[in-house]
Length: 308
Image 1 (tube, rainbow, N blue to C red):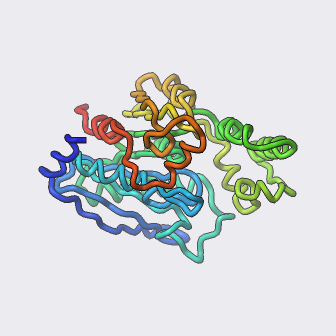
Image 2: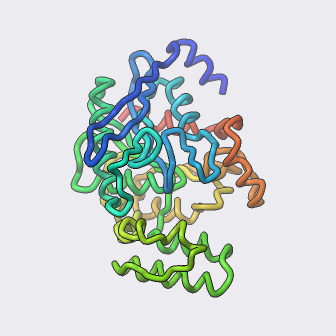
């Protein structure tokens, strides 16, 4: 932590700039946080659900993870552009329709944000830092050797197909017959079929308006995507993460042996120190006063800035 303080003093206060991309059907917004003469720039891609540029959502998440990460990286000389997803916060619009949303829209946005971030900071390319579902967005954005992406940092990302991870997450929480109904619906969606008459209690996950997006998401295999990427990639995973696990991180590392795998002991999904106990772990999701775990910023910055 002392190194961050000293670096910040030498670099001066970073400058925050509001940025808007004129995408269709509605513009999307973000915040560029840049130190003087940045050594690199990265786009922070948010996780699933209504997650805003700071890493928070109205579903009870107020950890400020992306804001804290951006501030820490600025202290190390790395500029960041953190974004509001389509339809969320500064990217909200009356023309946005959840029914029309597809995973490929987030991929297109990631590529556009990377180009914008590089142009605004005078860098030849931008890094993609994907958190949770954002890790899969980052991986998908590298398809077809898309130019303008320096490399990837995948934090708390799923290393197995989404249906496998969702069933693992939902299984212990759902009693029968809800568990079987949810698993059947996910199998149908993965096969490309819309599902009718889902139980109202499962509406947050399986509501009709989000099903087309789920179909587009469930087709993707992160291990296959990372195996096809030959650029720099770091995989960061906390050992007390109750959403994704070390199994996911190792699945990606096995698929791409050149990747750097970093495991943070006692760190959870929002990159903060937390016990394995579920209630205590989740309590950190609503506490923005808690700093990111030691090592997270340093490891990410060190990987981005290492000579290549």
